[in-house]
Amino acid sequence: MSKRLLLDRDSVPRLPRHAKLRFDRARDCWIINAPERVFELDAIAGEVIQLVDGTRTLAVLVDELATKYDQAPRADIERDVTAMLQNLADKGFVIA
Image (cartoon, rainbow, N blue to C red; front, side, top):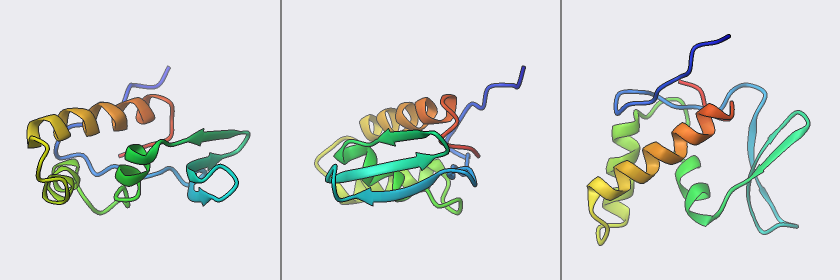
């Protein structure tokens, strides 16, 4: 059994090689496409996952989102983004 990846603010999340982010015009949303699996993202998740490029730390992602959405408390953004990316990591759609 493999060890569970736990993301923290210093993690550098990215999509695994087999998963591709793309905009699906038929569904009118962002999806992560992997062999025999498609994960449909809502608008917020699509916004976040577009920043997941394997170069930014989780803290940098949160900083960029907090700047863009300055009406939302940074702590809330950090909590929600970490939870979302952890959920995707648990499903194998995000690695670090």
